[in-house]
Length: 204
Image 1 (cartoon, rainbow, N blue to C red):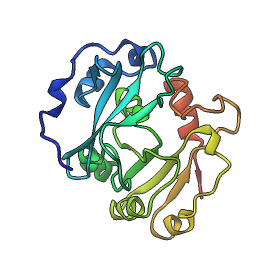
Image 2: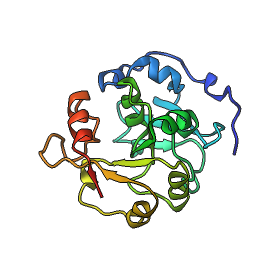
Image 3: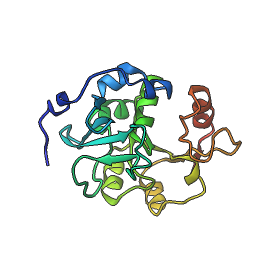
């Protein structure tokens, strides 16, 4: 399903204070067309395919009673099939090529946080693992790969790691000194902690 380029215009363009408080710059949210859906009481933003076409909209419920109502924290507006994209890749190809490195994070919010610090070569898996299609995309970038998953995945080995090592220089970010809480992404405790973790990444 391809949505019109102006699809997000139907939602309110207002400052998203909740995400500002979490460290995402409003100008970055504006770039990624983060909006507010008053009907669903949700923060919403586009899902692009690898060519930059909008194929879905992801929402983050923020209404007062979403938990009591049994709503998920995150949802997709339209049925989601296989994740065959890397979120943000349509904007990032040139900088990945220039830096010869791609940083793989779990969430779109991590991409936005890192953008605000000038780390522009991150893309989101939208998942705690790498799908087969994503693996082909990553190898096709011909860049070093830095895997920066949330802390609760630090001990896990992904099935595709051996393949990645064959085709790329493959690094992992892991929190060995308890700078993060169990559910944190590597960028969730601010820039200084991110830089410490990134600088201590380990080649696999």
